[in-house]
Amino acid sequence: MSRGLVESLPAADYGEESIVAATPCLGFSDFARSVAYGAYRRSGLMAAQECVACWRGREAVAVVLFHRVTDEIAPDGLTVSTAWFRGFCDLMRRRFHVIPMAEMQRVLASGQRPTARSVVITFDDCYRDNLPAARVLADYDLSATFFIPTQYVGTDHAFDWDVGLKRMPNLTWDDVRAIAQLGHSIGSHSVSHADMGLIHGDEARYELLESKRVLEDRLAMPIRWFAYPFSGAANFRPVHWPLAQELGYDLCFSAMRGFVQPNAQGNILPRLAMPPFRSLAHLELNLSGSLDWFYGLKRRLSLIPA
Ligand SMILES: [Zn+2]
Image (cartoon, rainbow, N blue to C red; front, side):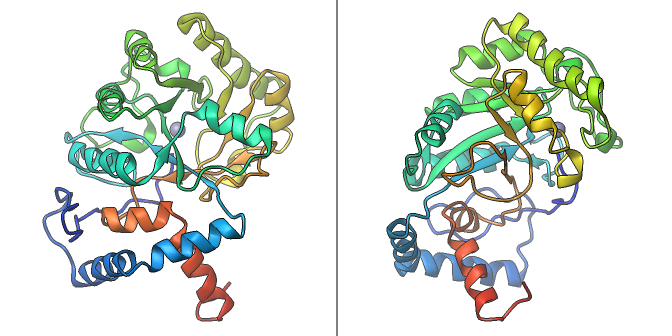
């Protein structure tokens, strides 16, 4: 998780694709940005930029990261509303290529270039609203991977960062099985949501191995993917990746921002945390890589510091 992304998400004017507002007021700068994003898309510039990226072999996979999908608390850096989430799913169905984690792993292992606009959807932290979110995804015929901190399944444990919020229940093991039966996949998020940057040797091995063992035992399926808790480079040690491989993990994820490049296998893979987006137009520009291209161009032109 990351607490640095706390940002309200007023819905913006996105023509026929407007979504229900997360907050009732849309500031002028948000409105102006939204109009600019929409104009960029409708002008064909976004499509042209993506064609150039494809021609240059720059296709990458966007692995998006959710935590909570609920109307019980206000949207924040870890929470999207159910209406926002349905808007996201609709956008994914119409304009992106959502692939299961196993397919991304196959593409990375094969050395193939991913299909343009490929997206992998992930969830962390085992909030109980993940089960209805999994059903919504299934309604849209989309699959996702849910990373589970095993110690908290079926408990009323609240994370430190949720103190003061309305109580957020956790998934039960029946819920996790129901998510898997919907066709989604499951990964490990450690045993205790440990900060892997602070632990060593046997403790790290325990968090990696015991969570895998418990999930495989409870779900009767192989667990091949690990998302390390917290978000930064300081929350993981380089030595943990070979250890994770030794213990049977194929892919390991951070929440550090970035796209998964075709040559990325063997590294700790980045993800794009949701929801730092003011509108679906903003989201589409971000997941298509257009915003990264735009900011990269500004950097090259020295319009913003490197
Ligand atoms: Zn987490």
